[in-house]
Length: 269
Image (tube, rainbow, N blue to C red; front, top):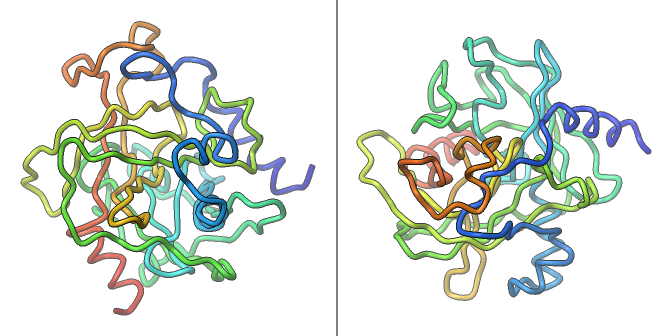
């Protein structure tokens, strides 16, 4: 096993196992290489997903692990900012991105003010400002990020969600993304700079930052990222019906409005 995979395996070991916020019955997640074709993904789309999405993690002063994907350009990613910042507000360091292809390099994140835009200086996990667009130390060669859809999301939209390696998915190889199909259930009216939506997507620890895609006019496009789910360690929620009040729900921040503006600004557009 390479040093890169040993590092990721060590970070994944920090996430508690087994329990999950499984909404409306069975766990719909699976390996991209196996479930992808069932969801209508072509082999080219599967390869593209593995090239543009993957792990994001930090090593200091406390470790963290989650998901991220290239956003607008092949040298910047979109993820949940709470992966990069401790709950106390202290910034993490020694952070990296790694796409999920065999032998993909671990690429450092540039965390100075010129290369990082977050929704807030001290973002709160699961809030409307829980996003970060970050420049990579080098581009992901040959990668073509998915485009951002110009339309707003709405209740009933179907999603194809990609996470790097959430807790409880130990049977899926570390180099293979986890994928699922799920549905947007509600799009609350936002009073902030960003938009968000609630879904019945299944989730566990380390799902934050997972890329939400949708097929629009036959093409896969960005919709948003996971920022929070219900109390996934609670066994009572395993298979429970969708219920926002009980926490049987997953929340995403949309890749439009202030998120898209941040991506364009960092890209120099």
